[in-house]
Image (tube, rainbow, N blue to C red; front, side):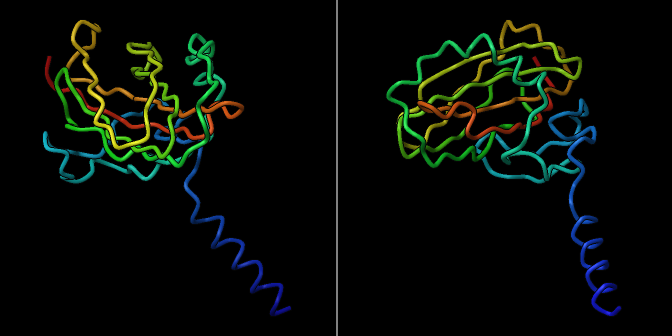
Length: 177
């Protein structure tokens, strides 16, 4: 009986500590109001809300994969599975320019999609990353984004035979044009 109670309590403790994957802040949700704050030099300033789901490998609902479908024609030949890191998106809050810091150990394909809470796509991009650290400039000028407003940047890395092997999201607060 003691073992049963101990096992039950352990099971409850383990499942009670898991973050819900279908809450509004997860990839499936449309609440983009929690974000990590970074200054113009890429120095971390803090958080607004619960950001525990950002910069992490996550499962995506079908609607997110559907956003990337127009980019699925990219030829992944020559891209090898690689250790990859998305380190930071700065500054956040932002104006019309942000930098996405990434690292890869092999040439890899990176795809990006920027959406608003109504799932309108503002930016859809596929690019090659060589093995190194990169600060990729993202320019939001002329995308028709409103301010102040919240957005979500989905990112995924792909290699030959391994599409979408690493994927996640970052929430953005755009405060100025």
